[in-house]
Image (cartoon, rainbow, N blue to C red):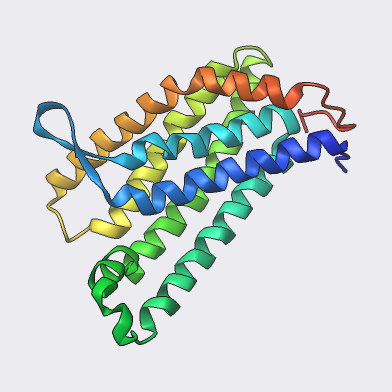
Length: 220
């Protein structure tokens, strides 16, 4: 069983806060589409969602697979509760005093059941695959080269996340060719942002490892 010093536990909880904040930012703020290259649009979630996958790699590198999986479980439970609270809130009647914001509120938080299922399934499968593939590449390539192991695991897990979510949420809404185009471009954008954020991962690892006195090795 992992045993943490008070300092290490504080750092781990701070990392969990960043992880969950990035996850909720992607799921809520990501509704906004900004203009991008060649007249295309891109969700602002591209700035926060890669942090979610990189964080599990960082945690896995420092604290091991078990703790990384606990982060994924925390994210899944938090997302499921948020969706449940959203459904309950939308179902409640409006007071006349709040009707001025009702249309925008319902539009932003009124996630369909199909979208909610797509989000949860994609998150659970992709995040667990990210942890599994990260440690697969660690065993294959050795402990050095974190950036390569993280990039390879993220390329695979981000692909799964994108395909699973898009297929469940938008099959029948868009044509097959359009859906494939959206999936491919969105996947590439997320991978590219994750690669750009890699230097920050090294900073995070350095901060978490500083005076870290866990008695169980991170290779667990």
